[in-house]
Length: 150
Image 1 (cartoon, rainbow, N blue to C red):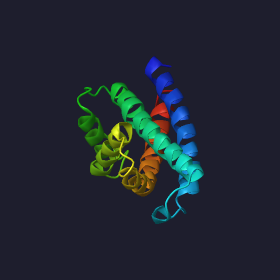
Image 2: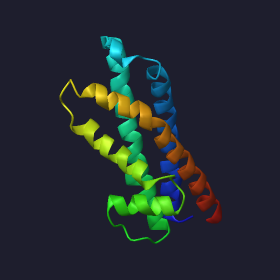
Image 3: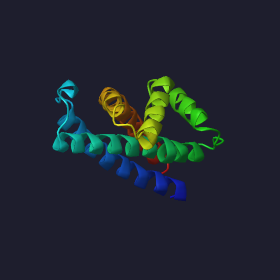
C-alpha cells in the first residue's frame, strides 16, 4: 500500500476519535444558556469545546484534505483552494461554511478578550454540526479511496 494511503488511514482514525470527543463536548454545552453567565465548571467545558472544535477543523483541513489532494495528484495551493476542491468532490456541503469554520478556528486561537468569548462559544455551538457533517462526508469519501487502493 502506498505510503500516502497509510497516512490517510491513520489520519482518518484520529479524525474519528477527535470527532467523538467533540460530540461529547458539544452535547454537554448545547443545553447551557449563555445568557445566564458561566461558572468555572461550565467555562471549563466551553474551553474544552472550543479547543476540540479548533483541533478537529485543523485535522480535517490541514491533514486529511491535504493528504487526499496528494493522493489525487492535486497541486497544494492555498487553504481556500483545498476547501474549494473539497466542495467539488462533495467532501463538504459548502466551501463557505468550511471557510467560516476556519476563520472561527483562527479566532479561537487568537482571542484573548473575555467579552468576546461568549460570541465565540455561540459560533462554535452553531458550527459544530456543520464541521461534524464535513468530517462524516470526508470519512465516507476516504473509505472509498482506501478501498480502491487495495
